[in-house]
Image (cartoon, rainbow, N blue to C red):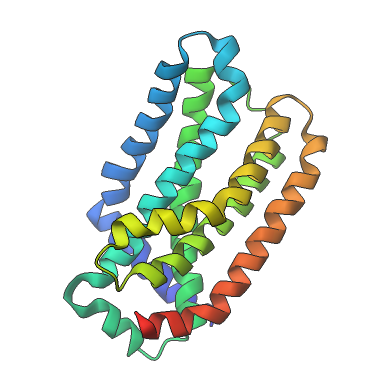
Length: 222
């Protein structure tokens, strides 16, 4: 399973590196979201800094939707989805590989957005371990949810509009936990974020476990 996951993740990441869709579309989209939030709230950093955590994670969540749609868009061309089903790879490995690729993309994006939030919003990036831990757990949760519901919607004509409606309600706990954890870290009280980190870890494990079990039947139905 892990070998198959590494193969699928490597395939997806190589496609993104060659096509540069994430670099040319997802990163500018996330940067535009962060910039527009700043313009909407005004230039006063005393207003922007307290809202930095929430605005950061909303931008990440919206970008995760694009990354998930892209993950299944590459499988819809030239019958690639049928080839994936007939490849003999473990469905759980396929799921973990696609989640791993999305998580890797999100982590790179979050590093770039963190610097943008620090510059534009005047946020002080304190509590590095809490920030990194919440990014990893939240990215895994978002990636797992996105791949599961991406498989649900991939065979439908309205998948581009249906996917956000499916993902956003389920991703709300991840958004809440990540925002609270970052908020505590940015306030200089990272020890208060341990409960939120635990919540993020629980949701990440649950979402991954559900995906490992359910992805095979979902892939066949798609």
